[in-house]
Image (cartoon, rainbow, N blue to C red; front, side, top):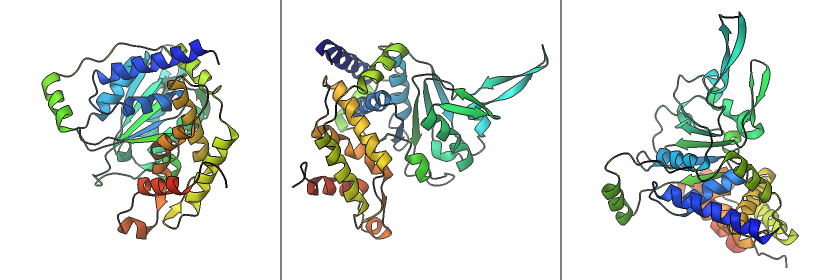
Length: 315
């Protein structure tokens, strides 16, 4: 891949991250992970207690992309048709026309996704996997690029509906947002007495599609692929896991690593890309045994342990 293409892609990524961080006070890795998901054609699950700027982060990121943006507030009475749209009678000509729902946007924020029942949550499944939706038997393609960013509060359980494993698996990465550091929180109080002004667009839909095409050209050596397979198989036989890493999750890890390499101006994946992305890409897909949960173990702990045990090269 030409060096100027790689350099330009990395520069665009840097501009997006800087623009987001002009509004979002948090780790540099967070907006970078959003970019990884976008360029790998994936979706993002954001977890965090109320008030840690999940919605602000999404709005700032969407503003930098120059794309259409819609927000869906998930509630217990939200219906699938409220997401996908429905046919309504046009009194002018007596025909039914599709009134598209908010899913027909490039960037869709699903706010508090676990507050809607499973039937409504499932309306996102086809959209996230196939980039299309079916409305009353008619299939409609969604605009490209297409990115879903869903938020949920992991602490509050009252009036919520846990996401099923099939839907959790549709999210390429999960990002857990915690409280800011003392210095960062002081900076928030100083800078944002009012609602912050969203950054200007850095990219365009066409530029994003070009970057996504470049990601597919990033090379992955067989040695790295074999390493990913060994990691995945190690989780499946782990005594503290009921559900390990699936082949689809392993493929998601490779695709995310390709995007990460491009953002670093490389046309090849390094083992370090795999190691850095293991937590965000794989942790939310693992299911611990009840005994492991009672002992206070976490999926991240098990992944760290697995990474330390699985060698890069087969002996």
